[in-house]
Length: 389
Image (cartoon, rainbow, N blue to C red):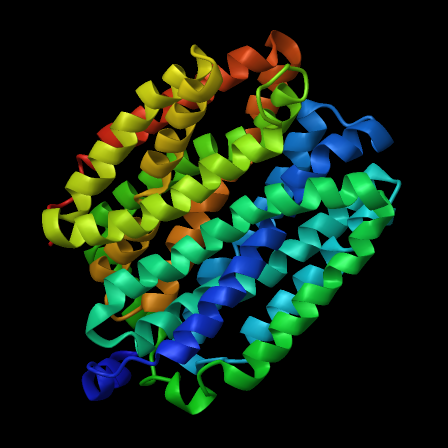
């Protein structure tokens, strides 16, 4: 727990450490979006179809997600600093092997193990940001989350040209950024003695969760449906776009969507502080569906602009849902981050596999239209949340 820290240092903001953690989040989520950037190349090398692509993405997402609440609980109790740099390096090493593996089953295993790295990083890093952000926690956590979304975007801008130029085996060199960031975290992340909070027991955690169960279940449902739309598009779009004659390449389109989403996340943090969490989450998700269909049924730069607006709208609630969960169980911030950034996201990612199967049987266009309908469902679900400040 971080109760003692918030009481003693609520006004202190450690901007350099927040900068290091946010930069690390950029790289961590760049690795997290490694597979969608690699899928078109794996399709050529291993003959991967939409179902197998969905399996790869889902295995990584599930292994990186479902274990996060357990990391979060233990970190609330112990304040384990080393997991942020070890987790980043672990994921970087394993994902760098994906381009040299020619067996699909082994590839699934490596991808699944790699997910444990980001599962270790996210709860501790987000809790670190909360502890050292003082009275600007919501805005600075939005910045931290936005940096992760920027990393997602950059992976699709940087990695496909890199793999095109140097081939699949060049994935081995992608371990270098992970090593550099792991060293930065080792030396500059907040010290362990500043993170460990008051002793807790499992019963107090259950009591905290039970008292906020209705709110947490609503937030989990919103995130799961939003993540299914988000992860589904990251999985299906590269395969769909590669078959079309586009004004710009598919990876540039995905970069536009994700970078706009990062900017939308920062904006969402500000707006939610002013107008409330529920209002921001519901309205932004409901607006996303018509914007996505507008993108699909227009062309040229109008289509690109609508995709950018859709990305901003879809991801503007990303950090807000994390803050909402932390406000629901304020004494278990790492656990709240693990539940929202991990468990809830894992539920949505697991459902990507049926979407991939639908794409193989009925066509990728049908799968995409199903995905485009999901944000409005998530937005309507968000209306069940309590009205939060």
